[in-house]
Image (cartoon, rainbow, N blue to C red):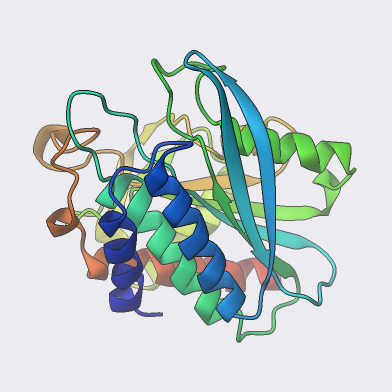
Amino acid sequence: MSGDRAFSHVERLVSFGPRPPASPGIKKAQQYITDVLRRLSLEVEHQNFLASTPNGNLPMKNIMGRSPVEKGKVVILASHYDTHLMTNGVFVGANDGGSSVGLLLELARVLSRRKLSFSVWFVFFDGEEAQRAWSRTDSLYGSRYFVERLRARGQTGRIKAMILMDMVGDKDLVLENDLNSTPWLMGLVRDSATELGFGQHLSGNPMAVQDDHIPFTEVGIPAVDLIDFKFGPNNRYWHTPQDTLDKVSPRSMERVGQIVLRTLDKLSAR
């Protein structure tokens, strides 16, 4: 598990510029993510859909990588890859949209070489960000569509757990104790962090986070969100043009990756 490798992916994503849905930048990101997954000999599925948004119907694309040979239950590792739509500045989303994608691609590299007691799907959601103002209908477009597809295929019961990563690159990393995550799964994550000596990266203050794990918990799939929601002093970098590459820490991404791997070991034994 290499934070430097994860960071190199973030560098590439940021080089594409802003990446809101249906933008030139996100199309480059889609190709990049697809190419990396295929180089790892993973089967890639594109879920193309038309999202009804306050800005009109927008074409969006979820991307999933998985092993050609699957077995048993599935654990989903996920991140959104779109960036906040900003009309009065340039938002490249190095941390918010970049760091978790870089980490997920690195985890795909590591886990594509491992044998686990379950299958792992690496899922990249489009349209996490609101087009205008966050609401139940203006947000989480990709994850809501993904869960709809699971239900339509009768696959919700096959999902053992879903682990979401978002905003994991802050140099002052503090992962939220999210009240909207499944309690027993959050317990595994926090136990894993403590065992690894990363207890300083865990928030002691519970808070309810709205993120791409919500559509999963709503249909009974255990899900957890690994997110540092307070980005920079007084959260001043969040959704601003200051969310740039110099704010992202390879060390933070590597530690979150180690927590995820330890949690997968616990899920394998459960």
